[in-house]
Image 1 (tube, rainbow, N blue to C red):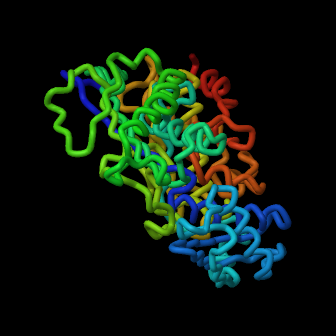
Image 2: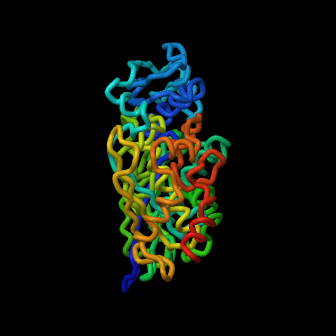
Image 3: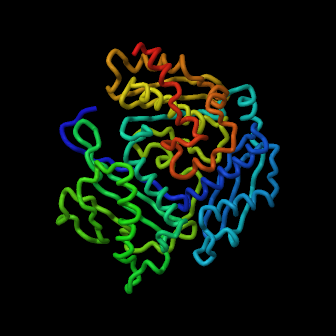
Length: 415
């Protein structure tokens, strides 16, 4: 990758209390419940949340208990865990009305999946690069860490006015050779209570500074202090940026002026609406299929995890500085229809993208059955994926983040 001048790239994340993420976490909590009792469960669960209402529907075939009482409890426990416990804000664990409409998976789908075929057609992408220690693009990685720390500060009472709904956005300035040069802009929009408002009924400048001091600065310093090359400057709503020094890190905090009404009361939430947040922040492609609420026979999810696993191991092996992988499937058919690799010209000397495809075929199991077995996906591990990103966290259950194939790939490549 090459360019003659610096450029900017932006990615966003959303908090666990964002309405769409509330829906994702409910869908995945139901999936985990099914897999805990029956690891062969077939689940396609969709959730909608709005003012004091949660609607769960979809197709589930399982031996697990899906009585109304059980599903109702799963939903309320998830809402409580996220932090919606105050009925006065329009959505809370005790007061939310729950509507449930679940039925069995179509036998036409089961017919193909039962013999090892993919649970749907489609194309899935994976991506990895050397910008962070977890081999994720830097903007989405930093945006996730801001939301992760936002939740920790809220739950610990370290910033008392915070409520669960929030968004982050990070803009990174890159050098002409596509290496990160500095953090350029940070946006934080966070729901808050009345204590953060000034005499005009707007989010106060003191509250903005508290977010800079307790959330933005510590998070960025912990991750990339080398990219903090200017002072943090709070950009107030409606303020022109002409007079701000070029080296400053611009911080837009609640840029509309207020964010008291939020969560599902402020905006309807749906499962699967944050697919770019869930993957690579727009840096790598996305096949279009959502992840949450789907069991691993759905290649929308499992093959996307495998594609990330492949890309990450190729980069970890030193075969390329960045790698994007596409897999595609036909419903009911086990083998991928194609494997595509793009390293953007960053392969190691003597290696090309076509050779990487052959290495992938040799070292990775790419049928739905092979993916599920090699990544150990028939476990109740999915609720945690539905917040702070499906990729880029090296947690014990995130098997697709391992780099255990890197040594074999390097050896087979002759490096």
